[in-house]
Image 1: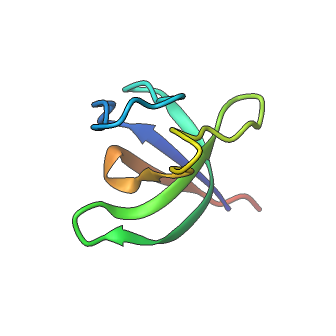
Image 2 (image 1 turned 90 degrees about the horizontal axis):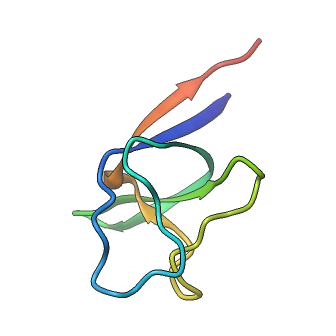
Image 3 (image 1 turned 180 degrees about the vertical axis):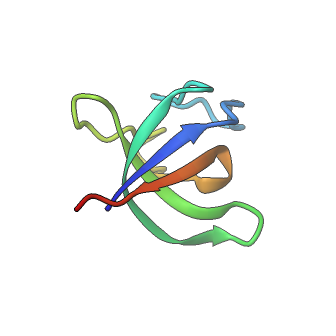
Length: 76
């Protein structure tokens, strides 16, 4: 199974991120973790086309799943 995330909300956070996502772009999901809090959904770690993780900052390694529309593809 492969999971992809299409960015639907690229609004900048209150801090100044080192890297950020683009609205409408589809990213590969590397993994999920438990919810950050009830309002923000799951924490999602994404990677770019080269396989490099995208980290908003050294202290924020994941994005809120609420920023994405998630897709699962099952491969046989």
